[in-house]
Length: 378
Image (tube, rainbow, N blue to C red):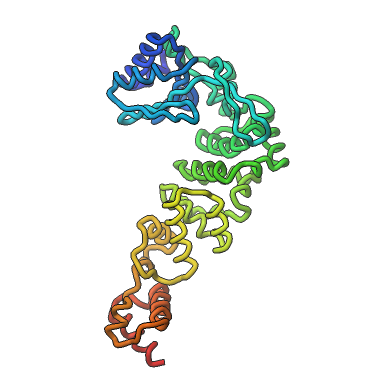
């Protein structure tokens, strides 16, 4: 199995592992490839992200690799981790550690620990494997919790009864992994998850953590199966009690458009509530807010929409109604040129023109001027 795992790597990737091994040996830092990238190797899938765990501070090892590859690295001081980004691969380096949770859904307290304890803190057995880089034997698979066996049996299994209580986000990750790899929850995992749901433990998660989990779901190549599982389990309501899984939401491939369509499926007050709870970066919130406002007003905008907001609304409206998303055909200058006195009347007229354009009654400026004339004659 070890030989097959290494053979599934491309020659450049195999070379990278040997170079990490050389640096680990140089600084006497036991080093391991860990987690999801090992799972993907077993499944014969390519992974764009590698996680390397070292027993002891990895900084000297990271600095040595960065010099060797002539790449800068970034230190995440708050977490004691380092990131090295190559052309087609991101590597995260961290000290192997153990965790304790002061109470359900709390962020963990961490301490340096052996690789065996590091693997035990992870979410599922399929993500609790490691590939030894140094010491020898190079490439040996460490699988103390039966992750390889579970992959072969298409089973998703947590490692202990308190797993979902420690970290309720594992419920959402369970849906992602079960759907992506077509796995079924083993009976104990299902029982422990149902207990966490009965106790409503995801309610203890911060809005930021829930937002992150929803975003990760929307990043999946095919999000609908995972979201359908969450609905079946009764867990979808922790994002919002009225989320609807309309298949058309998932036709676009980018998570931002999918999230926008999710919001547009809700009544405006509920959509605004959910957007406020998501705690997104300011620019993303602004784009989604714009799409929600245009959709609620049901009138063409005064100014060009942000590209992503326009894309969200275009998916909702359909190709035949794209003219509704263009700026109103007439502007305040056009009204002024018609000799209309400036004032509140401008706002009223532009609103009526915008609503007519939204409904598809105006497609050209001559049509807009004709409607303006009729409005002025009333």
